[in-house]
Length: 337
Image (tube, rainbow, N blue to C red; front, side, top):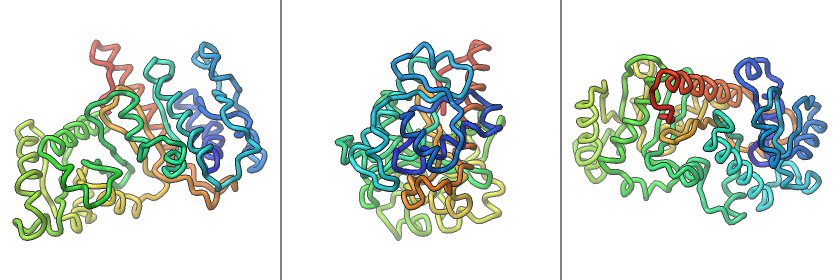
């Protein structure tokens, strides 16, 4: 459901009545039923989902209709729309934790997350910078990276929620290569074919042959690219980030591997804000997410764009179906995304 004080509740309420979502899956909303009812009334959204307590595991696990899995964690009357705090932050973390454990247990086929507020969860003593890090910790995943995808562009990230000054020290041949490998595996399954990859440089002009930066391109990124080519991947780079995303290049590229958060987020959000999907790759579960924040300025006003949530649920359903098909053919059912 995301943070109770943000747009997550209304986005979830609208998603569970969307015909496309209902055709793709049986949606379960992990959150607080009283809060969702208050938001539904406030926004004029019909609340048609069945309410089942989180503790009644067998009942919601076997549900055949849209269902709110009720945590009863936060009092609806204590939440003010747009006002995030430690209480709403802790609630959003509890919903995430419950959903992850349900996915690990096989009680749900995939998890799609609503937006959380990083300041709120940190105020609650949950010292993670975002969903990606929470998921890696909860699932004990060793090779994890973030990928954002939309019709126009797909980017994966070697580093995510860290300050710019910390990025160079977090780069290594091994980390760049594993990001390429995990991302390529996911995109091949999404596209159903071999893919073309572009790797961005870290520095302006991709370092200009060592003129800018500390030769990260020469010492780290290029060796990783060469190793990826030996694995049979069609890959070019490192390309200067300021020209890597031009229209002609986007048309012929399936995947852009970016060195840091804003390198890929800026072009992607400029092209497809509110409609892109976030996927955490390398987990033992399938997890997608909206690619927008809590939008506290418009919370509980029924103004939030729901396209990203619809797309995220649809992709999660597609990946879950593909995983089931692999299992039925005797292949590993472990998520590669």
